[in-house]
Amino acid sequence: MARVTGCRYRGRVKRIAITGGIGAGKSAVSEHLASLGYAVVDADLIARDVTRTGQPAWRALRDAFGDAVLGEDSSLDRAFLAAIVFNDATALRRLNLITHGPIGREIVRQLNEAGGDVVFLAIPLYRPESRSQFGIDEAWAVQVEPATALRRLRELRGLSQDDAKARLASQLTNEERSRIADRVLWNEGTLGALYAQVDEALHDSGVARG
Image 1 (spheres, one colour):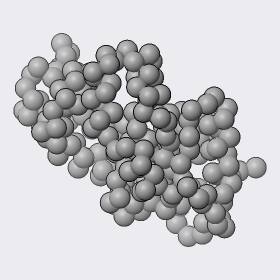
Image 2 (image 1 turned 90 degrees about the vertical axis):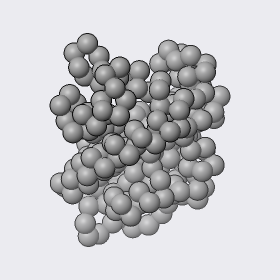
Image 3 (image 1 turned 180 degrees about the horizontal axis):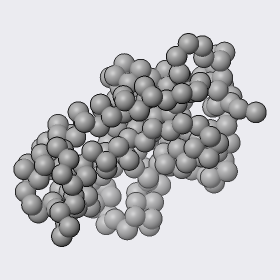
Image 4 (image 1 turned 120 degrees about the horizontal axis):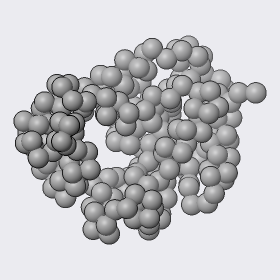
C-alpha cells in the first residue's frame, strides 16, 4: 500500500485510527504512541468502562445473556461472554447491538475533547463507516499473517486452537482491512521494527515531533 504523504494538518485536531485484528499488535502501537506523548483514545478501554457493573450496557447484557455472563462479584465475565459470542454469530450481533451505541458516543466525546494537533483512536472494529462516524482523517492497520495471530493467541493469551480460530474468523481479513486503511504496518518482526514503521508513518502524516 502506498504511503500517506502530505503537509502538516491545519484546522481541527487531526484524527488517525489505529486498527488491527486480535493478536496483530494494535496495543503495542498505541502504547508506543502514548509513550511519545500523543493522545490516544482506546476503544477497548471505553468498552470496559461502559459495561461496568450497573451501567446501562451491563444491565442490557445481563438481560440478553442471563446471569451466567456475570462473575461472583456481579461484574461482567468477559472471557465467558467472549467464548459465547465468538462461536455464535447471532450472539455476536446481539452483543454489538447493545454495546456499539454507548461505546461510539464515548469515543466521540473523548475525540472532541482532545487537544494538540493530532489524536489517535485505537479501534479494533474499524469499518468503512467509521471514517465519517468519527471524523477519521487516516487509518493505519497493524497486520500479521493469520498463522502468526493464531500462534500469539495460543501462546500469549492461552486460548485453545478452536477458540483462537473462532475469534480470528469473526474479524475482517487482512485483505478487507487493507482496502479500508490508508497505511499498513506489518508486525512480523521485532517491536523495534514495528516502532520504526510507526515513526515513519508519523513523519509522512506530518505529525512527527522533534
